[in-house]
Image (cartoon, rainbow, N blue to C red; front, side, top):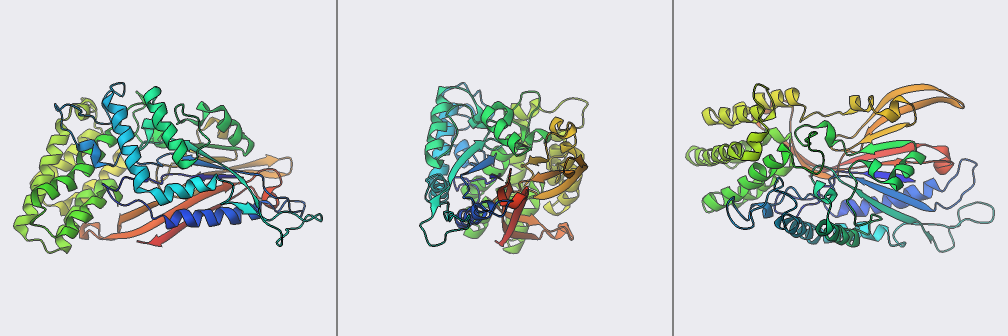
Length: 455
């Protein structure tokens, strides 16, 4: 049995909340149920499942969203950002610091993942001589192997070198991973084991960030930073810190705390609307709102001056940087409320807010040559199942499907009705995809689950 999850975004607590540890306990219970069901075979006989492989398809530990990146300013000793040369010693030192902070902040959730691989968390009843489930005897363990692959928020674990091998060793120990300390794969073809494993289920999978130019630079590949990293660190991460520093004594504590949830606002480019809504809902006087807005403008102006950001602004090409600059220049002139029209335009123009990646699945080689029945991406956080094609097979039609593994996340999502009113709705999401092979689950090939919890 193969289970795919992605986009858990466990953070260090400095930029928004991670999903609650209750989600991991729920997942453990669901795995037990799945293992029991998979042990029921297509011939009607109960044979205990031997192994479960759990593929974590990127953005598991969220290294990007941490205020630890902001401890030093440019020009100071020890200054480091995601776009700093990773071969400099301060870079792996910062990744190690943030990684340890994430693991500590999510001790219960991390322990739940490791327990899955202990041999005691996931068990099934043994079989009777007649091939039935023996409910009276002690249950037997199911081997669980946990595999970590990277996305755009944890791409640092894909970097080569002894310093990063040591960091990966700590992650392997903390989570009980089946990985080696060598670079965690981004493209699953980088791992012969994972490639063979997924082939046996007729599945191909990848995080999906390669289809998002805002979060993946195809020129430099996955061992390089992207414009999305700069927005996250220098705007999303920085703004609450600066508000606390400059206005912490003048604003209600709840505002500063809520601003730390910027990382969980969707769509990302609706961030100005979230800020405006917090000020309005807390009845902040117009004069104070103006000061907060001026701080936002200052931070955004400084962002546009960063050399790394300027390097992405290709002359004579309407690109993402120019779109961001348009938003910033607009907020210089008018209130936050008018930004909503730009949000929709940027998402449609640049694809950074693209909800479905199903069309990309149609170009996968394994789809075209019909070797894969399932194409799986993560990244968008938008769980979906999309029929791609069907063709004749030896035992009936063969169906090809695209699936997105969704997310495990807390959200504050902008309501689509009159977005200018800045209404955000909180909720938590948990998704997993399950695939079977041979005679598992009475011959069923897949099942998926996505749940939404009130925030």
